[in-house]
Length: 259
Image (cartoon, rainbow, N blue to C red; front, side, top):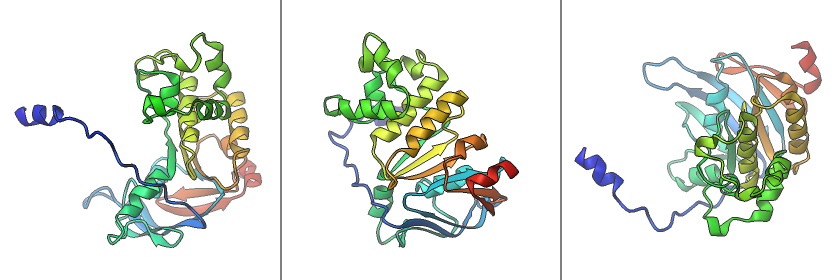
């Protein structure tokens, strides 16, 4: 216990060095990727081969346990494959000779999970999460909020972007919390956006408006989405169906009605 308290009482470093984002110029490729969470655990991914080209909108579908979330965790560099390689523009993300590459790749990605963490601070601080208060670009915050279909709600409140959200966003609805999480990802101006069931808390009309706003973003932005509602994936270029840890089928949006 004394060791834990001593650790907690250590001062924070005065400045945290953030890696410059690694640009995506051509494609992300998963080559023969296997993954298991432990030596005695079954394989979640079994020889997954997948290429995502720069600027594509990719949907991932599949039943529970098919490997969707594991795939995006590997894609984001949060997990390392048990076998196989993850390549960004042909460079191995986990090359031990270039450890800086992984940090730079993580800096290039914005992730919107199903459950959004919100700090007990202002809406602006939650959208520009991790940016010191004095360095927040409020115009960029407003633009991200507009794209995430939350700006009208924020600007209608007396304190606007300085309104506090309460602990874990207690003053906001589930849909509002989700849209702030999406605005946070857009504020980061990453080259890859990953949505993991990110619109599940939104009603159909709000989700449709949000997806139209996302579709209007730069075509150089690469987007990967996990969704159970197939309508979420209407604007995707390809929909990848996973089953038992590998690619089962590849669909085009006009094929969804036959799934």
